[in-house]
Amino acid sequence: MKVIKIEKDQIDDELLAQAARLIREGGLVAFPTETVYGLGANALDREAAKKIYAAKGRPSDNPLIVHIGKKEELEVLVKEVPEAGRRLMDAYWPGPLTLIFPKSGLVPDETTGGLDTVAVRMPMDRIASCLIELAGVPIAAPSANTSGRPSPTLAEHVYQDMDGRIDLLIDGGPVGIGVESTIVDVSGPVPVLLRPGAVTMEMLEAVIGKLDTDQAVLGPVSDKVKPKAPGMKYRHYAPRAQMILVEKGLETRETVTETINRLAAEKMNQGFRVGIICTEETFDQYPKGMVKSLGLRSKEETIAHNLFAVLREFDDLEADYIYSECFPESHLGQAIMNRLSKAAGYHMIHTGEDRE
Ligand code: AMP
Ligand code: MG
Image (tube, rainbow, N blue to C red):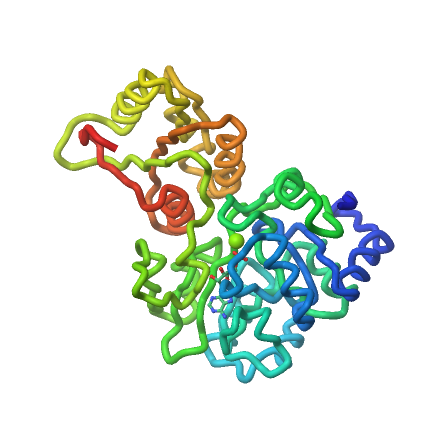
């Protein structure tokens, strides 16, 4: 796999044109976006889309997000643009918001996992938007990780997962946001939040009023239910360790840090390697274990930015168990808790409980 380095504020057009050519010719190119690194291919080319699934080891019914460079490029991909979609595009494109529309005949089934809808986003990142413009085709791009692993927020993460599997990696440095785009389905009668992200529920409601939230955002999806966002049924964002979230319980005076220290000590005594995910405020309160801070609790942007990198660091450290603090679920906290919950397989306990 070839790697090219591109500076965001001084984009080398000639270098990027090579990447664009690879996309046009049906190749696979990983590139930075403002959310996470994407694994891109020509969205209108069936064979290229199939290569994405193979490189990621991704189940073929888990659809891809199509990235465009200009709002006008949406029209040919969709059957119609419902009013709620129009309003959200006007408010938050370019940016970390993916919208689901009824698809046009131009978009192959391979790109949408066989669905009759298509997910579209217009990224804000300059490298991403220049690449799309130079390629001259919409770019299908899921996160550039092996299926199931935490999404890549650094070029090194992509390298770890994709070396030998793709044609080119564009190293544009660390991404800005660090969690994947918000997904809203505007193809039905009521808009539905399918995945929380940096365009928060509060920001969505400010533009279109109340929207529904898909069951899969709220909790685990049972085998019987067919989720609207097919990706949601798969294990996601997961570190190799078993992860447990610890939330303050009402019926005990034990604090979150005390519970984590107690459970971590038990596991360490049994010979396991234990990781702890905390914040700057509590870092000094964990004397033992492999302790990593996500940043200041009051700075949600920092927490989101560091989350996936910390999960990957615990893979490198070969942690067997990871105990993590929780976060309030408003604003960006909803996306943070969504990713943490999925990484933990929804395994959450309350302080004072003596088992994980
Ligand atoms: P990724 O970019 O790797 O985070 O994956 C893209 C995700 O977008 C998928 O896992 C789906 O959850 C969602 N998605 C893409 N297309 C659709 C669609 N047509 N309908 C519902 N969800 C979609
Ligand atoms: Mg993904």
